Amino acid sequence: MSLNEIYSDIIIDYSKNPKFRRVLDNSKHRHSKNLSCGDEIDIYIKIEDSIIKDISYEGKGCVISCSSAAMMCETLNGRRYDEALKVIENVLKMSHKEPYDEELIKDIQVFSDISKYPMRVKCFTLSWHTADDILHSEEKT
Image (cartoon, rainbow, N blue to C red):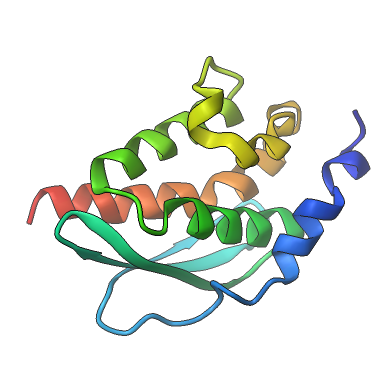
């Protein structure tokens, strides 16, 4: 598979979709930056009664970074806190070519070959690591 094949229609559509691209007031927030390429992202998560009630992102970056963030928001929105952590764990495993639960991450598998491109893995995982940081900080409060 070539790098061009990674940019499927699905990925490009998600990168252009503004549905989850917004600032979310009164939410947990983290800013992250990929020093390798300059991608920057802000993730916002509202958690009520251990459920992700809303999630969004803002930032600038490549198609992979933006589409990954949008797909992450769609995937985690409405999930229980503990379930969201499992999804994130499995997505990160997939990105590093480790065994993962295909049923749990479903549509995110469009990125399953990302592990062949180490510099793109960082773009893909930026939003997932940022959301993981937010959720793990929620454990401590």
